Each structure stands twice: as structure tokens, then as C-alpha cells.
Image 1 (cartoon, rainbow, N blue to C red):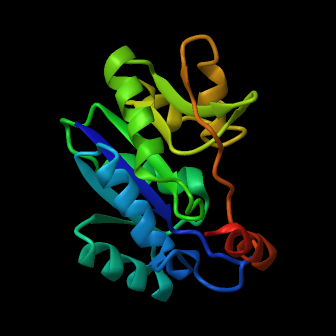
Image 2 (cartoon, rainbow, N blue to C red):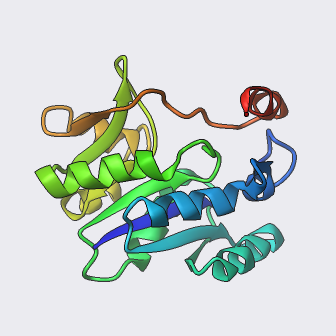
Length: 192
């Protein structure tokens, strides 16, 4: 089984409001992320929420979407990723990881990554375009101990460590992170 992990424990400081509840195309970022992972081939979806009041709202919304919830007291993405990995069942062969602030990732992008993993059993699978990588990033179970080690660049450290054996799935475009109000305005300006 390939699990999906939504990283939603950040503090959204630069945005000024909780990113999981921002909206695009009639759905919240959290709803979009859970749907993309579920429809993209993940056998279960885990949402990592913060341990504060906003995190409680995220956890409640995630549970209402049928996702399982893990709580992280640490806002750093790599710490949330570790909490999410720890929550997964023993039969999870891999985890497709999607930060909640990349709302343009759709089921097709997730499916491309999960199918590439099932075909190749690569340790890391990423969508790629013109030498850049995007989301979601799939980590096979064999890499999880590495993700629990010292990571100078967070999970990117493991992606780079597997440059020789990772699989890059070509995609027409890479989805942008939405970190600031300006990013959100640009996102809405180009949305259909």
C-alpha cells in the first residue's frame, strides 16, 4: 500500500492565516490535498496537524474528510514528515508526501508518481520538469530511516542522496508553493 501524507502543521506566519483553510476552485487547500492523494492511488491518507488551536481545527477537518490524523508539536516540515511516517501502518510500502501549501497538485500528478513507484520500486520518485523537482515526493519505506537522520536540507537531503537511483516523472508543469498573500493573489489570478 502507498500511503499519502499531507503536511499541514506549519504556522503559516508569512501567509498570516492558516494555509489548510485557504481556498482554490471552491475547495480548501486541505480538501484539495486529501482528494489528490486519495484519487491519485494512495491507499490511505494521513494529515499531520499542529498541536495548537489551529491544529485542532485542521485535525477535525481532516477527520471529516476521512483522513487519519497525526499531531506534530514541531512546525518544521521534516519533523512533521517524521511524525507522519511513524503513524503509517506496517503494510505501507511507500509514502507520497504533499505539503498542504501546494494546492495545484492534482490526482494526475499523484498518480504519475505512484504508478512510477509501482513500476520501478525506486527509493524516491519525484515529478520533474526542466531540471527542477516538485510535489508530491514519494519515499519508499527503505528511505525512511534516512529521513529520521540528520538532514541538512530537510527531506531534500534524501532526494539529492538518491540522484542516481531516483525516478523523475516528467510533468507538464510543477505546482508552486503558496507561502505569502502575494503568492495567493498570483494563484487566484491564473486560476480558471
